[in-house]
Length: 129
Image (cartoon, rainbow, N blue to C red; front, top):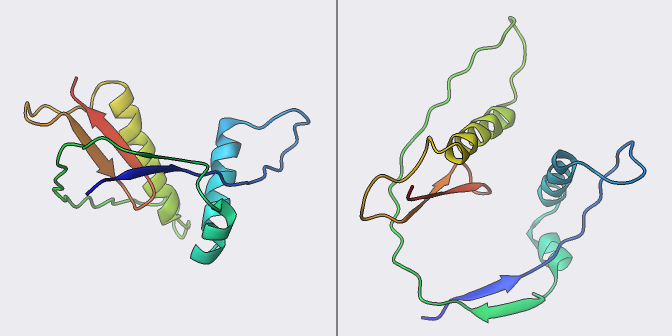
């Protein structure tokens, strides 16, 4: 069965103290805020039809092996609240940093690319060294 790649855009805004631009962190946060603030129908309306579509080449078979990661954390001070989403994002960014530094790679000679998904929105692509 053929697979198709569709390109979409979505508008978002950044409010900051700069007259000229926004930082990468501000852009990333604004995109996440926009996506998290709308339901499925609003998302479909916001993206509209794709502006480009093409048929993809046949891709290698992808298999999934699921592992569970438990993140234990303690507050610096008693009764200090901890945001679970922030802890998850910190874990994701730490793993991405390890991947970029070459400390995380695929060592199995039968695997060319692995995808590490921390949640349903973020995936890290890990390739052979």
